[in-house]
Image (cartoon, rainbow, N blue to C red; front, side, top):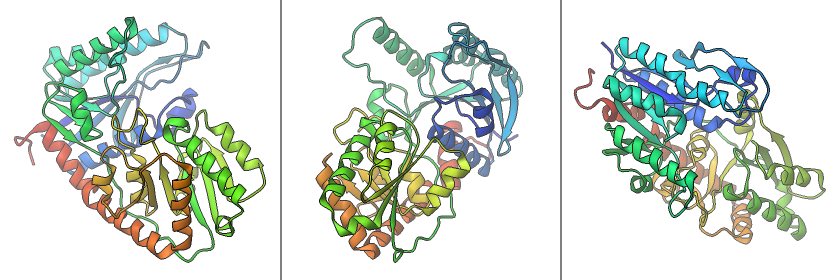
Length: 395
């Protein structure tokens, strides 16, 4: 019998997201989970996803029943979702219990919890009672150290509960997160790099730079906006060859929209939240991908910017801040690193890309090779499967 693993998370396929009117999800997190499932299938593991299937409870009386769907041949149980506050949270808390019991009877023996979410507590306790081997997938460090008050105390209690009951250890988004959980053993897992990168033309007229995801100060949106403003004020001829395309959502979106409406170079094109197909089209025509969580920000060592894997796998040159395990993954010469959160330094990197396209192209190729070597689907699936099930796993 093939080993089976249950993944409890809030991953959403695009159809379910649209049907339920959810706008507060994380597309990057969903992609990472579904790609993990595909890589596990490649090495003989049967994954099953239990998704909260929820967004913010907006106060309407909408209710969505539980539904079983398949996403790339992986079964996904979407829990019922009510948009009535309090009732919504209660349903989400209790709804997984029946599904966890049902899957236990179908010989699922391991479960992965995506981050330490209070909404998973009932499922965590149920899986512990049933004897599941529980693993924590820690993607973000909770910033509660030194805080006081009821919310902080509850947060620390939740963390201790997950660390105590996840006896199978923890998958970590970056190595520094090992200090933020007592679950052992640990394995750093950066995601899956799919094949099929698009070959870029280093002699094309324009250099297209992609910035996407959550747009806010902590992810570098203010830094990029100020850099573009300085570029426009400088009137440099090379800036006419630079173009920015912006996708995603967040507090920085309005500033990018204002930039797009103002005259000057570089050009700024704002798409906002896109469909998966639209995003793929933007990705394939881009040359450079930005991953600029601030070097001095709270997120610098508490998570890993998954977009560097996505960008490098697609053949883009990655321009990233020097945080987390990025340099270890992409290599010393497989990306351009912004070591200080300064517009002038970022402007200099943009200029170097435009003025020496062949050098930038070679750097992008090295990054792609490094990521594909470390994060190839089968290799990633094998590492995670061995971590979850141990050497006794049936090959």
